[in-house]
Amino acid sequence: MSTVNKVSLSEEELISKLKSRDTIAIRALYDMYSAALFGVISRLVPHTEVAEDILQETFIKIWNAADSYDSSKGRLFTWMMNIARNLAIDKVRSKDFRNSEKNQDIDNNVDFIDAQKEITFNADLLGLKDIVDTLKPEYNNVLDMVYFKGYTHVETAEELNLPLGTVKTRLRMAILELRKYFN
Image (tube, rainbow, N blue to C red):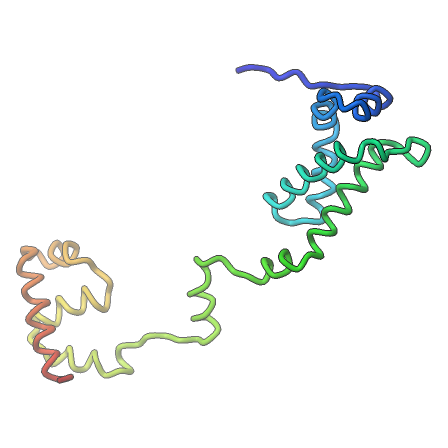
């Protein structure tokens, strides 16, 4: 496992190197302040990926605006923290962020819609179960397991101790019988 040497500079050295566009300054900034700045951002932005993007934008803005830093107005960390905080607030207030908060994951969408409408499927209410009960018992058992209990064809064959082909044939015959009721 390799160890990475972190760069640490005094505030005066860091400011000097930032203003002279020395690339060691950005590495030192990251090593010295990334955790603290990320903490400020993540308190305002709940999504880790978005917070990481804002942290990157913060370092870019610090790098590009280094000449505008004035040490007589405050410490470097305070200046950087304000940049990070302002970028995070801008993101949270942005229209695209607010809209993305309203959107749901596709995985939860169907469950959410069903829960809202409280739609349930009950074969008994449709009368289908009554019609299936009029079929021969061997057809009824196979249909019940596959369509009402959710068994696969293979699982049904194993459970009823029948060959797979017999299960498929009985299903087909049961469906043909049921078609007579609906056609």
